[in-house]
Amino acid sequence: MALTHLGYPGKLLELDDGTTYAYLYLAATTATMTTFLLLHGFPSSSYDWRIQIQNLTDAGYGVLVPDLLGYGDTDKPVGVESYRWKRMAAHIVEILEHEGLESVVGVGHDHGCNLLSPLHYYHPEKFSSLVFVSVPYSEPGPFDIDTLNIQTKERFGYSLYDYWKFFNESSAASVIEAHNDAATSLFYPTVPELWISDFAPIGAAKEWILSDKVVLFPPWLSPEDAAIHSEILLKGGYTGPLNWYKQIMQHTSAADELTIPDANKYVDTRTLLVLAGKDFVARADLGAQNPNGRLRNYEVKVFEEGGHWIPVEQGEKLSRMLMEFVESGNVNATGVVYDGK
Image (cartoon, rainbow, N blue to C red):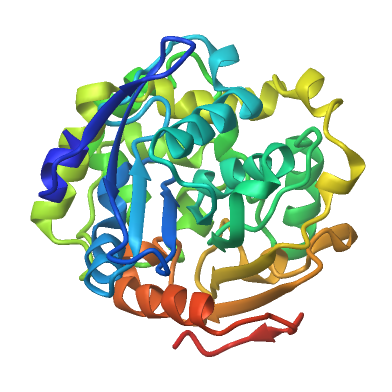
């Protein structure tokens, strides 16, 4: 369904383990033009890349845009174990190889960044460069949500990840589905600061959604696009999308991560981080830090006035940024550039 709304003929591919993925592949116009792998986040689908798909293909670039596991027309396993990073990374690589793509520019947004990181742990040879949008590169290892909530509350006055506790509840999917208008209104707020008071803190997101509170959508999200978003997500339900959070909290990838070579935990591949000054969960001041020096050849750009949904809110600018990054050659900067141009 997500691919249908994009207006291009999509594909369905059954992989070796029996999982079926839906994706869009539009080949580059010449052999010298690179292909972008676009990985969406939560709660999204391939449809969130609609602006980049149009702009990149108009310029001659190729795009491969999957509905990730649990989303759109791709399979939606119920078990959390099915969403291990190594397993999902292998799925994406199998699609790349099916299409004969030896190397791509990997671009992730939100949870798509969390998948792009293990794609590089396990398959670094597949990427000529990497772009992390809203969420930075993540190291292998457990995500200590309780410690992070304490630290961020001390630093910023509110905890960034307490909403994960609600997402981890067994009833979360049914609650969101039953109160979709309120949930969508909260996920896509007109005022980004709403996430400080009504999304991130403990119990706030659940309270908002159960109250059926609805506010106007931001100007960059038309009522038509909001309706398409809801149609796509409600058709498949929220069990699969929320399993991405649950597998992180349960650290289902622990055994797999023991096999990652130490060298693969560092990124020499050219990397661009694209962050937003008014993203109050995936904060730019945290995302730009590069803990433990894992990124060795990177650049950071920040949309100072932008919120979390960069591919849609800053769609034209992000498209230009992606093309300029690919065409610019080596990246030697390790500082933050506040331009958003």
